[in-house]
Length: 81
Image (spheres, rainbow, N blue to C red):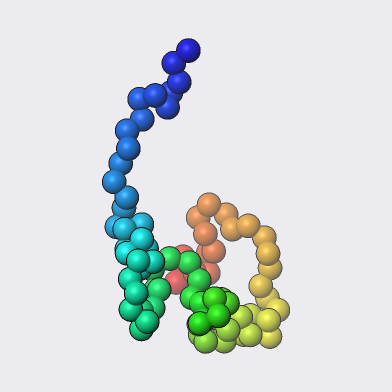
């Protein structure tokens, strides 16, 4: 029986994947991975940007943030600004 995957072709990696692969083979000790995912410290632990921490603190203080899913058109107070 023929599989739908029999006709798939192999495609080249996109630019982000290419840069990420190049990062891992680069031996420069001063390199910084700003490509994909979370920032990490020298121990491999995630390091949120200070501005992210600040905004999180503001959200907690306001306590107006709910955890409902947004409608398809997004947050009206944001999209109509």
